[in-house]
Length: 256
View (cartoon, rainbow, N blue to C red):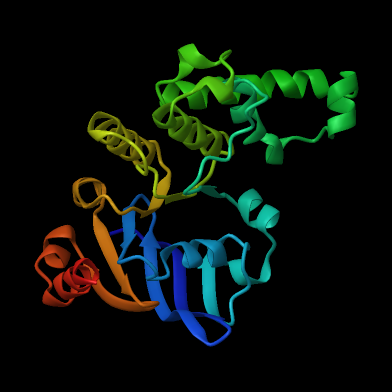
């Protein structure tokens, strides 16, 4: 296994007495697909929000390539090379698919919105570069033929893929994927699994939150199981699948 790209230690977050994340530690190694799973309310998305600066942690540490993420703002974390997709669709419906993906590359640009609009000081050259990177990201998500289509006209499966392409356009080293298969049918979920593996094969490390266990067991090399904000188990898919504590956590949720 390669060296850790992300090291999280004793991460804590409390919401008015509710311990959403309690003393959680884990590592994500470079070139790995790692999954965070657990029943609803286990703290998975809260951890993503802490790692990306959306929420402030109460305690703990999260080090990405020698940078302490918990001391940084969201845009600074993104500029470091930490990308993210979200549970719900966050596309700009008034824009085309290509324009949505171009937004993902803006952190690497020098021209501001005014110079880009006026096509001065090299902004036009930057826009050409934005388009090039965005088209490459769309091709990686098998969406190249939809570049000119309105985002508002896309079904949920294609919207999910556009969000993945937009995250890839930011050229991340680590991609946090929050329930990328939510709302997808079986065929779309299978394709999403293939794309996640292709992303890893291209050199991007993936940290995945997902409720679809068939997808998780197929693509993840290592799984961290959370329950009520705490670390419950960690290991390979085979080890996690046979862990009685994990089975009890999920069966308990079903019984409820």
